[in-house]
Length: 271
Image 1: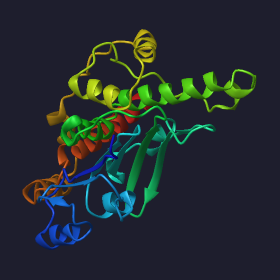
Image 2: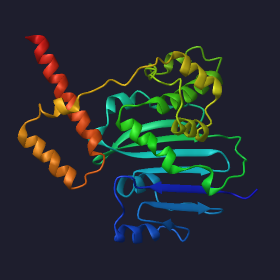
Image 3: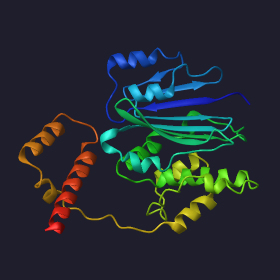
Image 4: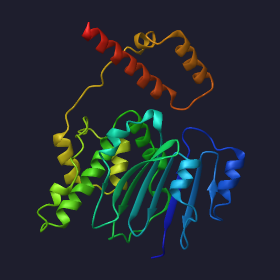
């Protein structure tokens, strides 16, 4: 069976400029470039650029898969929309393999890197086996505080870490405190199912997480009322940003309005 590697990059928040498209096209003779994406497929050789560098400067996401079993998912995340403290709880690196979840600040953004190395590998693969548009929705979930996908992958890696070395009685003690089990894992949407398939998360791990996960209805929030708490000058600034087409602004505005509402509630409780 011949070698197969596929790199798919996607820009969700903005189209690439004409000059950027030309630049990306110079990275490889195998480049398939559009205003929002780039795909590189290799049957020999490899991608000459750093995926982290490419995502940091040009794109919002990358998926990589190879027929020897390696899977990668890389996200560029705006610092204003991410709870860094919450995401860091999911970071993990196995002693015995190259599997990891890594989260770090790069310039003005965060990069979240998920990496699976399946030594068994040896499967036939094609470019359309996985869809970056589907897996890319995990990025939106993270910006909205939904960590279900991250928890499932953390559980896979943490389970493998403790199972691989049963003679080391201190192995579990060495692991960091587990992140909290996110709610609403019992019903898996299409994005989570695609994520589970991509990272080959065992059904037993998913079932255990579902058993520990509570169902929580989404709290109804009166954003109109919260927006009225913002100063007039700040509301005008938000409107200008909407008119200018700033990406993901609804997520950031909801977060800001929620923070203002929380401050008001705390002040009211103190009086």
